[in-house]
Picture 1 (cartoon, rainbow, N blue to C red):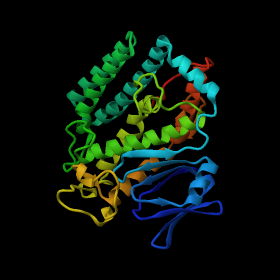
Picture 2: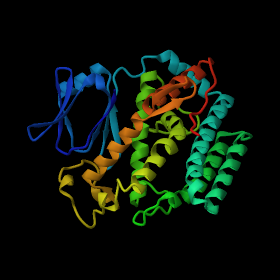
Picture 3: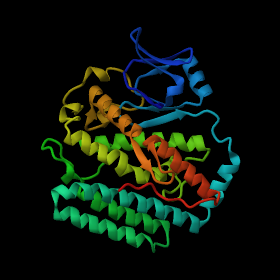
Picture 4: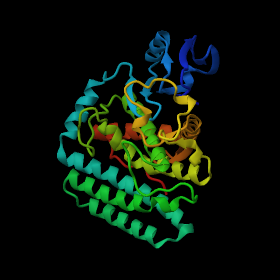
Length: 350
C-alpha cells in the first residue's frame, strides 16, 4: 500500500539507505519506509534532506513537497516534468475554447455543490434545522442556475453564493461547545476550525497535483480558476469536488469525536512551544493568530492520511478504490475528455 510520507518532526533528516527512505533525529532512526511504499513526501518546516536522498527521490519519481510547519506551500521536487508535450498542447488548445472551458467548469461547480449538499443533508437528518434546509435549497437553486450560465465568471459567482450558503451553516454541524465556526477565513486562518480547513485543503491540493504531474498535464492551466502567476489552476479545479468529501467531513469528524481539541492549538501571543525553537526562514509564527501544536498537527495529518487511504466505490469502474486512486482516475478521465474520448463527470457521493 502506497501513501504520503509526512515529515513534521522539527530537526529531523531524511536520508537514503539502499531502497529505503529513513528519517533520523538526534542520531536515532525514528521511521523508515521502502521507496515503493511512497507516492509523495511532504516536508514540513525545519527538516533536512541529504543530497543522496534528493537524488534518489528524483530518480524514483517521488514527488516531494516543501511546506512551512504552519502549512504554507513553498515548492516541490518534480522529476522529468512536462515530457508529454503533445498532451499539454492538447490541454492548451482545449482550454482556449471558451465553449469547452465553460462546459467543463460547469461540471466542477455542480460536482462541488452536489457533494456539499450531501454533507449537509446527512447531518440534517438528525439536526432537522430550518436554516440548514434553507441553505440546501439555496445551493440546489445555484446548481440549477449553473446549467444556463453562459460565462465562467457567472459560474464562479454561483459557486460563491453556494459556498456562502454552505459555510453559513457549517458551524451548526459542530457538536462541541469549545470549537466555534463563525465563517470561513484564511490567509491566515483565525480560529481552530479554519486552521483545520486550510491545512486540509493545502494537503489535498498537494495530493492531487501529484496525480496531475503523473498524467503529464500542466497544473497551472485550468478552466474554472483563472490563470495567475504561481497559481496551480488545474489543481484547484480538480479538487473542488473533493473539498467536502475529503476535508470538510474529516474536520467535522475529528472535532465532534474530540480527536482534535482546543488544546491542540496555541496563540503565539500566549506561549511559545519548544517545537518551534527552529528557524522557519522567511516567515514567523508571529504572522499567525493561531497555530497547531506539534502533536496536534501530527494527529490531524494522521487522520487525513487515513481518509486518503479509505476505500470508496468508484462508479465509472465499479471498483472499490482508495480516495488517492480516485484522484488519479479523475485526472485520467480529464485526459480522455481533453482528447475527445469520453465526457468528464465529477466524482460525487450519495
